[in-house]
Amino acid sequence: MGKRIFANTVDLNNLGRHLRIISHPRNPFENLDSLLSIQRYIESELISYGYEIERHEFSFDGNLFENIAGSRRKNRQMPYLLIGSHFDAVPQSPGADDNASAVAAFLETARILSENELTENIEFVAFNLEEYSMIGSSSYARYLREKEQKLLGMISLEMIGYTSSKKGSQKLPLALRPFYPDVGDFLALVGDENSKNFLAKAEKAFKKSAGLKVECLTVPVKGRLFPETRLSDHSPFWDEGFPALLVTDTSFFRNPNYHRPSDTIDTLDMTFLRRVTEGIVHLAMEFS
Image 1: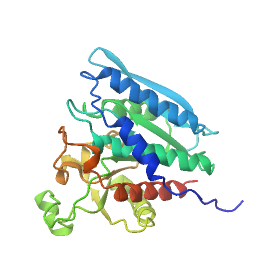
Image 2: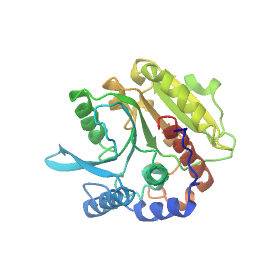
Image 3: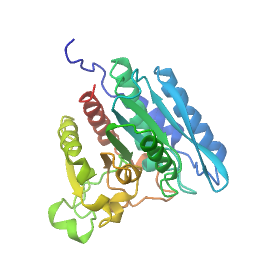
């Protein structure tokens, strides 16, 4: 059988629907009911696309929480691509960019791939408690390492909906400023040295999305010289030796609404979010 291609385009209505449902305060210690409601929503959407659900339980601060994994993998021992995004938020923020934008793309990607049967080598994992030092993804990465699971790669979708066309809108650590644009209208892909090949493949895939500008960064020693590059769910996978990438609009280096009540849907660039989602689909197709 030849390479299958996806006929579906990314549906902006779907992205908008997910954003409206998810973009509400959902901090686990201030808005637990809201967080659990959104967790159930993610799970029900994945089930509706035909994915089998596994709830991965972990404890934090005396409470039990869950990551939600959806897959249709027939051979559980074979390496696969893991697509992840976190669904919790900091206190008093609706978290539209952080991280409803990524969850919306995550769900739309899952839908498109399921309708084209490109799902056997992919797992979708919605991580909990990223805002508390990546507790959920750390637990999941350890779980995969302990059972000696191999990954083709892991991508962490972290804030992928905010852009600015203004010169000087893109901030960066001093050492990186000479090498990257100062206009915040690009997608950043960040990998460690163990992820170089995966990063190169991802760059090509994302550049297939028309109009999407992509910048890449490889960091040494698992990002410890640039600790800002470790602030999402990819870093526990780096630490466990898996190839993993951060896919991001660069977070607080660009978005002035980071961790604030002003992180709302109306601040997002929906065209950019659509293009990023297309790029995620293109990347997933490389592993189908």
